[in-house]
Length: 55
Image (cartoon, rainbow, N blue to C red; front, side, top):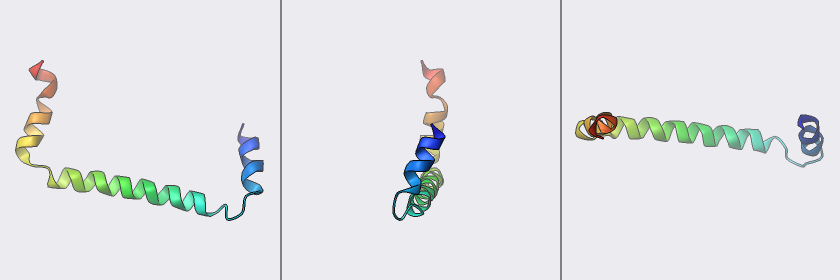
């Protein structure tokens, strides 16, 4: 399977864009999650923390 993907990507033009794009998407998602955790209110944290125990 990997050899098929490797052969396919060798024939593509501008093949170096895809790894860079995926890295940028990962970093943007990771930074977004960190920002969300940073701005999360303490009351919301307590509510989320106790969710499994409320059932």
